[in-house]
Length: 473
Image (cartoon, rainbow, N blue to C red; front, side):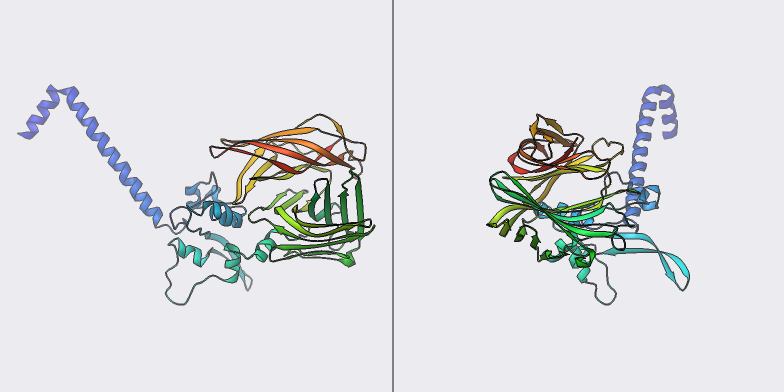
């Protein structure tokens, strides 16, 4: 009887019956999809090749999770650059303290090749920090024994001040001998409103077996507006540098880092004797970055974007004692053949800002070749990109007969964040580039900046003073 009624209804009420059948089919289809998604999620949760644990797993933007799971093309070069910095400051630093309880970096299913007794075997290996994995509820279930952080694990996740600055600030060896290789410590110290020092301790050339050496370079801007330059060449036999730390010896001049404090001694001609300690401000550093190609290497790190200096600075029979004077320290390395750069570092009431970028002659211009980093007391607030700097006006630069700008502006952006920096140049020192066929003047400028824009939906503004560099014809 029911079957007969159903068929009669289908014949008599065709549209209604088709509508009901469509609704029923749609419901069944949705149920099938939901069951399939649930089954896929269950399968992935049991998949050992997917890294998990805790509440949030952070992956690089654009990474294909399915390609990671299957070992597809997108997973061949999977990695997180500067992972220590990301884990310790961007995710686990003071800025996120109220949101992030723990950060647990891990490597899972990494393809390695084990060689033993002439036989090479492909293996899968993983690594994690025991205390961090346990903190997010992803620790291993031990059958026997113990599994705790090694000293290397602790240095990775929570380094001491000595370990942190050793990791940031160390020397390098070139991949091959190159006469244009150079690496140096750079410091600037503001001794007063009208007095400052540029201090460079440099090694360069065909290190370690060819023709190479070192040089101490100091420029002093006197209170009366005159500049003094000091230079002292040092042979290889009197040079010692450390590829695991910041320590450097250049003849009678030295740099030592102990427990996050830098001790600098620079001795040179003209009665030059600089002896000071530099204390970096907490969290105000920029991690090491390195650009590489077949012929070009350019590395840069800023251990002390904002710092204070205490000590005595002497030259030409005049000495000045400083206490908690504003200062800055960075470290550069690479191949400097026909290279120019834009650079600036400044500190205001809220932010320390850092911008820059390196260009090699003949290199195709990138869309946004320069970066701007904003750093506050909690670390890096944002890193933005920009393509050009608009220089305006003309004023004579000190020495070398060059012309410097009176002001300049840059506008940097990242997604919805935009920041504008305007700088009024109060003074510029020009140096003639010495490389053959490289007709440029190098400008070292002092000026006052104003900052305005929006970061993470909030208006930001600041002002202060800083140092800036560029090249002009």
